Amino acid sequence: MKFKEYLQEKEKQRAQQNFLSFEKGELAPWNAEQIQHLMDFFHGYTLMQLPQSEIDFFEWLKSADKAVWEDLWGEEDNRYLVSIDLLEKLTGASAQFPLCDLIDTPNYWFSPKHIKPEGAEAMIDIEAKLDAGGELELEELLLLAMAEADMDIWHYGYLNDVALDKLKKAVEEMVFRGWIVHLPNREDLVKYIEF
Image 1 (cartoon, rainbow, N blue to C red):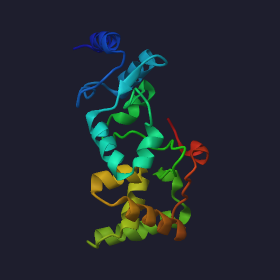
Image 2 (image 1 turned 60 degrees about the vertical axis):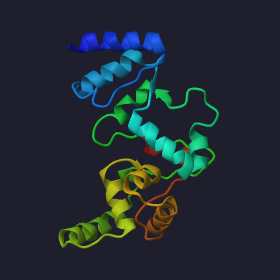
Image 3 (image 1 turned 90 degrees about the vertical axis):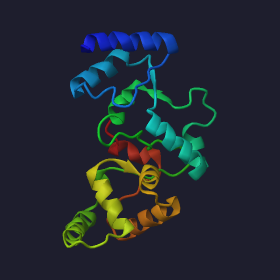
Image 4 (image 1 turned 30 degrees about the vertical axis):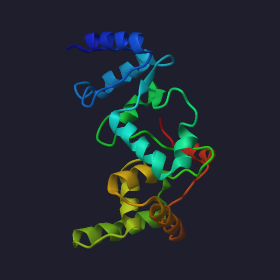
């Protein structure tokens, strides 16, 4: 199928259900420029349903940290429908809904920019420890995850089966060690968010 035909197919879907949805692997044939064109085409008037993997995550979050789930979704009728502008964040290897806009609960979202010079120095020791086959502490694992890509503790806990209270304590320890900056208020996070 050509991209133009695909775009027409998605327009029909939007007209029928009033939002877009994407099956797993559906976007794989399209490059970054085409994904951007899709976002631009539907920008401003189209919502998309989160991928099933993210819906599964949020259903887990509802029981694991209900206050965070309610902060995000609350009484919304369009639960799990988000702006098409987030499509790029939901494609690729590290596809995740960016959980960084909490109002009533503290944010635990981090980007590589949150790593302080002491954290960058610690990365050298962590990599040496890894090369030697050593076992890493949770704080060290989190620092590696933060260095790779934007992340939040809820996705990390879900994907790695780590309790949220342990992750919150690990973040506190990382701040204490001077490795990272933790900005729980969304207003403070704005300068770190690039999308």
